[in-house]
Image (tube, rainbow, N blue to C red):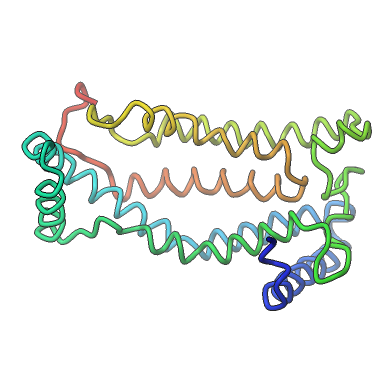
Length: 250
């Protein structure tokens, strides 16, 4: 079931779409045929800027969890065979440290409606019973509603399509690689192998998604991943992670 088919959400989706089209019209005299794509980029930047407090909350939570990592490891070693005692001692440790184990989660959930609404605009070819005009706009002749998959299956992919969509995917993959190199969490030998692998692969899944979603959604994802990497890099310096181990142990 598409939640955005419900009248209240459909109305919000329609309003957001009309707002983007109005911004496109406003930018057209200066940006010409790139106005719609520029509107997508600008709105994405505004949304990400508005969500900076969420990033700050997540950075603080990540720092606090890393600070408690040595004590948590000690508790696992001592009470690993007693799940109930381990849970009780873990919660007591968080209380004594004045840290919530769920810190950073609620702000992420709070941002979901805003991000979800904007992203839905780029995915829905029909909004409130009429065609999504934003997806018919073009950049260098490539419709914002086209994806690499649909272009290939319909035989409409040309050199420009490959270049533009390829750049979007490359930017997202590049941001994922930078995230993996510079922002990976401190190594914890107790972390399951599956979690380690998932953490390494996760930054690149967005690049795979970009192969299948409309061009407009790909632009949104590219701007978002770049912004997120830059923001996290700055916040990591403001709220450095120190789990009590030496660099040789990491």
